[in-house]
Image 1 (tube, rainbow, N blue to C red):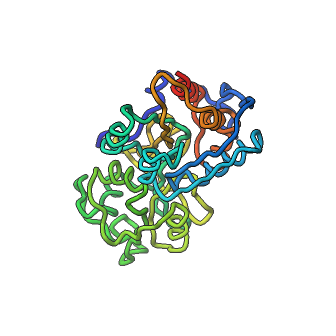
Image 2 (tube, helix red, strand yellow):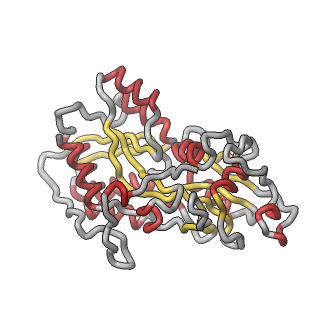
Length: 319
């Protein structure tokens, strides 16, 4: 299978030097410096995966700007493009890239494309119950469990005994996933199912936390969600990609691209070419990619971005 996620090493040209063991925060990230003249209302509509992060960023930002009012709604990535087009939100968080038809609809309205802003790194995890003894899964096995079309060519997997757990032979695999409004649903469908169809027995959940709670409450369950929603009741299964080796859903494997379901989390904004964003939106996003904002990313269980990527973001918003 083609490597599905990004390789940040390829993006940066060289591997980022390791930082302190207890943190992956790039020391070269800039400190955020508050500026004068920032006020007003900021609306964010989009991804549920980013809901907690958006809330934490808003709380941090309001400490610097107490008079700013921030409203956050997270019902799924597919709600972000219409909100940007209709002008009901300045920020559209998404856990997948915009689709061509979404970009076309935006461009038809404004005459230019929306601007993508990378804000964090996520390992889209395949979670099992904490007491599940499985060593790991291959991408083909993930497809065979979740997909009715099995475009990766595997056999239909419905029983834990088929995955080598002899003690669980005869126990059905209980599947949890997101609903179709979710960017995580779309990303997983494209990359884990090779754009195939989900089985109708997948229990679709309205939010990421509900997926993890469902898996944590069912010994024989498996489900997918952003790594930031991990709890003590579940474990993220190592996944084998093209190289056949199991890779943990951790920072280093996302950075190298070895973990096959690594992805950027992003927001989209309406930025007219050649003109900077309005001050409120610009300063909020500068805060998000600053050292303080990326420390929040790490605290929430996701992975912070390298300083070079953060600087590219700022450059894209100010030119």
